[in-house]
Length: 253
Ligand code: G3D
Ligand code: MG
Image 1: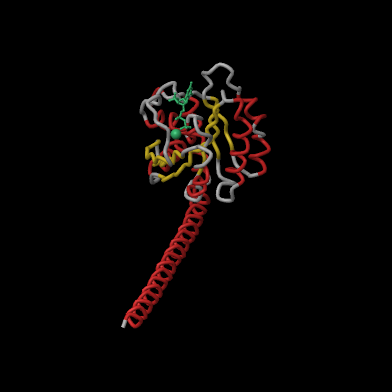
Image 2 (image 1 turned 60 degrees about the vertical axis):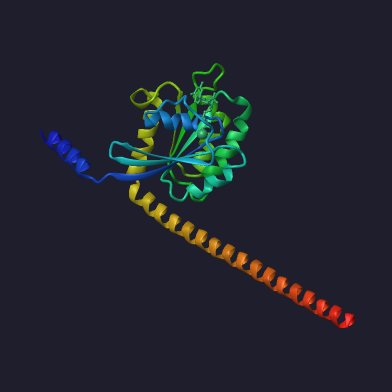
């Protein structure tokens, strides 16, 4: 009887809690299946895809969470923008193409760079070992070994869960259960430490905005100076032309 009342109280407490806003960054090499996974979670056809140019932002509701997912382009040249999204992220979804054995080292190096970043280290990470439906796809244990996942997450103090999955299996309610399970794991681990992560997100985001603002001012100042120099040079050139024109007239007379 007592435990029933305790359960009711904790359910009531959770029910009255306000919705929590969570931002996730979804990264991984190009072609890993990030957009397919996010579309499946969103309830849209995961096979109806175009390559991600830059990034796409997806807002969805998951139980008590209002989730924003930044699905970032994974091409080598665009990976440099990922760090711009780290400060506002509460957690990470790293998608791996388990069938692409040739690029597993590149995946390992990329994952190491993400987890080592000071604005990511310490945050929870979900690894989706995607494309398990393809023949020759690496199994969970092989992925853990090839990515040195245990070492990586221990060194960077990231809670981590790996889910072997297939993003093209279905969408909405029919999305691969492992993706659903992984997402619930990630959200519940963020919720457990929500105040601390949210405080960090707020501080890091404010710092990043201040840096961006400073950058913007410096760039504007540089442009102003270049324009000023050009204007001065232009005027100097006009004076030279004017003087040479006068001299020419003097000579003619
Ligand atoms: P990205 O966003 O990480 O770059 P995409 O990757 O989601 O755009 O997916 C890249 C390609 O992989 C797509 O095929 C997509 O259909 C396929 N794909 C994604 N997930 C899976 C999966 O679990 N299994 C299989 N077999 N294929 C998957 P196309 O042909 O459109 O390039
Ligand atoms: Mg994409």
